[in-house]
Image (cartoon, rainbow, N blue to C red; front, side, top):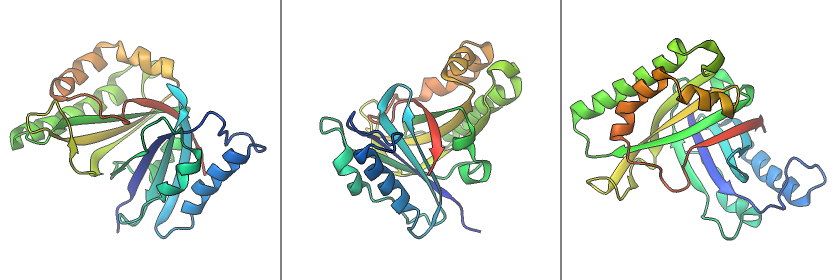
Length: 226
């Protein structure tokens, strides 16, 4: 059985682009770009949403059954903010897959977090990192008070690009892990971050993390199905 690969595309649109408004011509055009991807080979599910941190930043997520498939991001050009950086795209194999949980569209808000680490970590260091990430997930899902616990959790290593440039890495290169975490609200996530369980379990991860990649800083997105 083939694995589902999820493509995440992050881009900033012009303020005049309002897909939520059925009378907005540019918004209709952007929705058409989204819907055209549904007709491509390997498309399984897709969703889009605006970032709470900047509502002109849009996250577009597509589940593909064929890892070779990709969205036609060139078609986004008419709607992009001309002063913003080009769209940022990553591909990851998440566990559990988003398509099996309907995670994006059922969560009130979804945290999208790309964590970068030096690609020169030793084998023991890499194994410890994987263990720390699993412990972090367990601490939040199983040990937080229900009022501030996540609603869902998927994560995986970024498959493409497999390596990115990072000035803080000893090798100048980094690998990324991607977390997709559902929350009741941004405020609930903030409260969770103040708990001992969160602080204690994320500390060893932060000690290894290199910091955000441009275009992949943490975002909270409310997704809707395409």
